[in-house]
Length: 219
Length: 221
Image (cartoon, rainbow over all chains, first blue to last red; front, side):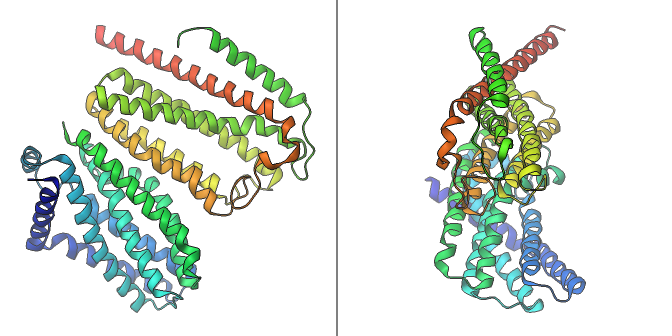
C-alpha cells in the first residue's frame, strides 16, 4: 500500500473504533457542554474580551482531554502490530488528520452551544467561524505530537499539560487576536496576517511531526 | 574546542566591553539617558541564549541520527547554559524596564514570549527527569527539543513583530540601527555579543566535559 492508502485505512479504523464505543466524543461533548454551563451560571453576562477568552480556555482544555489519550487507547501490542504493518509516518499523519476532524466537529458543536447559551454579538460571524476551525486544527496538530511524546514517557497527564501548554501559547495568542478582530468586525484584510501565521505554524508542526515521529515510536 | 586562545579572547573581550561599556561615550537619548549602556549587557544575553538553544537542537538532531550518548549530554548542557543566560537576560531586562518603562514587567509580547520560551525549556528538563531509562530519555527529549525550537522562534522573533511592543524593532518602533548616533555603540555592542557567546560556549563545554567524566566514573564503578 502507498502512504496515502495507509493513512486512509488508519483513519477509517480510528473512526470505526470511535463509532463503536462513542466514548471519547460523547465524553468530550458532555465536558464541553457542562463547562459552558458552569461558566454561564458563574458569569451570567460578560464583556466581549472575557467571552472570547473563556471560549478559548474551554476549547483548550477540551482538546487536551480529547487528544491526550490518542496514543494509549489501544493496547501496546496492537500498536506494535500496526508499526510492523505500516509506515510510522502514516500512523502520525492518520492520527493528526483524525484528531483534526474530531476537533473540528467538537469545536463547531461547542461554538454553537456556547453562542446560544451565552449570547454575545459578533461583528463578523464568518471570520469567527474560520478562527474556530483554524484553532481546532492547530490544537490537533500540536497536541497529537505532544501526546505521542508523553505517551512514551509513561503518559501521565501532568506531563502532557507541562509539555503542551507552553507550546500552544503562541498559537493561542494569535487565535485570540484573530477572533477578537472577528468580534469587533474589523476589515478582513487586517486579519490576513494572523491567518497566514496560523497556517504557517500548522505546516511547520506537521512537517516536524512527520520527520520526528519515526524516531519516537521505535523503542 | 579545547584550545586556549578563544577562552583568553573571550575574557579580554568581556573585560574590554565592561570597561568601555561603563565608561565609554554613549549617545544622549531621551528617556534612555545613561541606561543605554545596558544594551551592551542585556541584548547579548539573548544572543548567547539563542545560540545555546541552537547548539542544543543541532546536537539533538545529531543524536537522533547517530544514537551517540555524548551528543545527548551536549544537548542537555547547552539547554542548561541557555536557561542560565535567559534568566540573566530577564534580570537585566527587568532592571532596564524599571528605569525606562516604569515597571519591571510591562505587558510586552517580547517579555511574555521569552518567559514562555523559558517555560518550554523547563518542561524539557522535567520531561528528562520523568524518564529513567537513559537511551529512551535521550531520544524522547531530543524529539521534544527539536519540536519546541521552531515554536520558540515564532514566539520570540515573529509574534513580537506582528504586535505592538515596547521593544525597539517591533510594531513600527525603530530599531537601534535607525538611530543616527548608534555608530558609537556599534563596535562595543558587537564585540560584547561575540564575547558573551564565547563565554556561554566555554561554560557549556566545561559542563559537558564534567558530565563525560561523571559518566565514565559511573561506568567504571
